[in-house]
Length: 78
Image: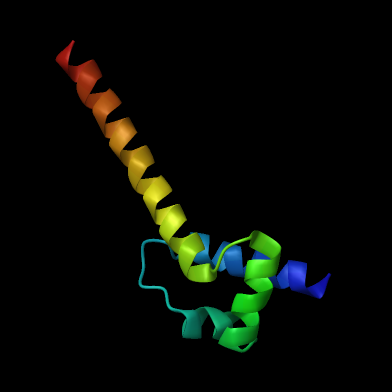
């Protein structure tokens, strides 16, 4: 149960800092875990490494912005 709360805290930290430089050392420090242990626990709970999670979230946000921008541009052209 403690791991789940830690992972939720880590995900919240990542989401709040997605636009900033994120590194495993800072994230582990925030969670008060070693970076190796945190990455193992994160992988077990989430199904991907912290680095993969950050990449996927950033790609998702970029894709959403692209879609939104294209829709807004389309409305302005009509």
